[in-house]
Image (tube, rainbow, N blue to C red; front, top):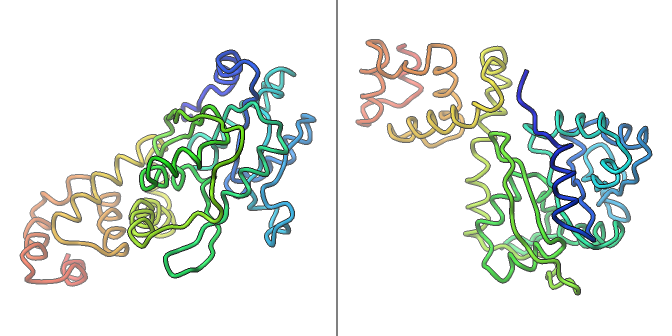
Amino acid sequence: MEPYFDLVGFAAVATSDFPGSEVYGLADHGGMPGLDKQLARAGIAWRTLFEGSHEEGAAAVAPLLFSLSEAWADGHRRLLEWVAEHGTYTSSLLLLATPLPIDEVAARLACRLDAMLSEEMNVLLRFFDPRVFEALLGVLDAQRKEAFLGVADGWWYFDRRGALVAQPSRCAACDEHTVPLRLTATQEFALLAASEPDQVAEQLAALVPEPWRKVSLPQRADFLERHIADARRIGLTSTRDLTLYCGIALLEGEDFCATAKWRPLLGAVQRGEMDFSSALAQS
């Protein structure tokens, strides 16, 4: 069984560390199906950030805001354990501490869903996905980052290894975030590049589901990081080729590149003497 995060302990400590504030969870319902029913069963109020928008009918994939402080204070340990089990490794849960009431928090967060690409195209910014949240913080300048985070006095998110990462912030009395959030082409490219391991993981789950399932959830990020880096060293760039390279590592062992069968083939690919598809055909 995977070591899920101790959300009960976190709620207790965070509630104490932020007196006068409420600790909230912001969950991607698509990654944690059934959360709405769990919250309703415990009597915990929640809000959807899609309320009043064109996406209002998409409840199954909506970002849901709910109070962890309320769940902890009312002794809903099983609910908190359920949230931890379904949120630690699914890239579906952000945490934040703020003195603002839930309706104002929901309204401010909903504004942050609106973004505009460099081609003047409006898009839904899935910042409630921790992978997008982490990448976004890396591309915003200091002023816009501070404004974006200004909903809360503290944020936390789970990285791809299931580790909790703290993100300090300051809750602004008056929201200073500009709507929509305008992204440059460079920022768009950086966000897209940051999502590549997740695209590879999704394709591995479809192509080689059983071997991929056997890689423990905390180890998957390191597995992808190692083998995507190895694949890039021999010149592979497309998501398809990166996925196939990682798939071979799953099927034939992590040291497959050093075997008598693969060493000459991968060497030829690196020297430009054949493409990766030809190497696969000859393997």
